Image 1 (cartoon, helix red, strand yellow):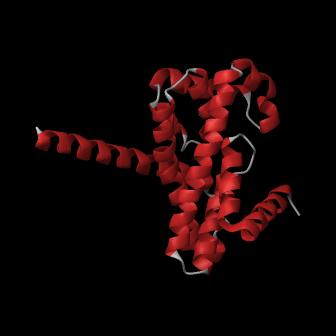
Image 2 (cartoon, one colour; image 1 turned 45 degrees about the vertical axis):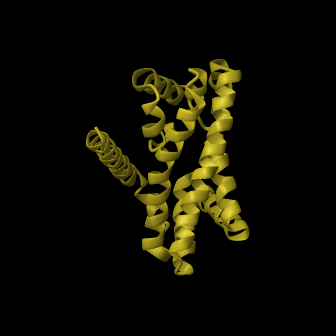
Length: 207
């Protein structure tokens, strides 16, 4: 049995055993740099929804996973704000975060500011580490919370929905995650543009 299969079995057992609480805990842990891929957690959650024929569970799983992301991200944000850069450079490898990945996340934040939190939530490897530079650069907490939530929802919902649609074949997502990630990012950008358009249109009509 390969390490990936054994790890997948352990994660799916945990979610089967604890349900929504299991989803919350695994996604919070992922956002704290514990190497638990959302590409396993969320599609399997969608599969559970498929087994029960429950759209409600799909929505609940998306909501709970997003809350888990937020809690874990706030913890990592606080570590970044209080401990600083040397911590992640020295200990990041123990959480499977390379120095190169961290420096890339830093550059994203320096270049795009708070928007890096939104888009970073949907980028492989970067999505778990982006909260650290946000804390390091003291991004305002309310803004950080909002951007983390709206950045997490499209990713979590898309993976859960794919698991729901694929049913017993949900594990195929693991083989094609490299192709799925850019699609989710593109969809999130389209959603952001749409929301900004609606917001500005509403402001114009009020004036």
